[in-house]
Image 1 (tube, rainbow, N blue to C red):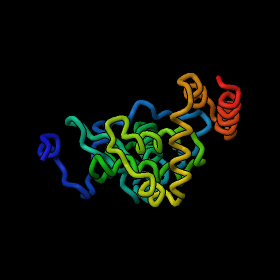
Image 2: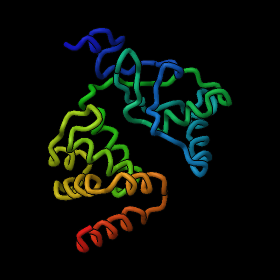
Image 3: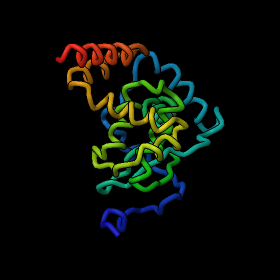
Length: 195
């Protein structure tokens, strides 16, 4: 067993109450101004007394003596963003194994965002390639988890891998739905021209 797992204060699969200040949300997670009203409504619905409370725990991994958010980003962001205003002090969390975290995040993204969103495509690529310290996964397993074909998963991974860093940065910073299609068209044009 890894030392990190031995010293974890919770067992896998257990739901527990986590003080909100102990939850680390990855720094590449950001909230757009357009999402704030929706996050406030979500936070209000999870507030005890006024709403129904938090029905589903967020998913966390124990990494380097810290709890890191793996899935449940909207719930965690809603609670963290409005914790002072609405009086949140804790969040329900469930611990999962590190090797399951990426797939759970991908399932969450696939349900909420376009399959051609930057986040979804990057995560598919990283899971297929085993990047970012993630275990390398077989496209068929990823496809089964998100309800897509293996061909679709392999195509997304190849597409993201073929993009130049400046194209990835432009895509990440744009929020319209047609960005991926424009990048794909540009990539196809470049490959035909031999660039």
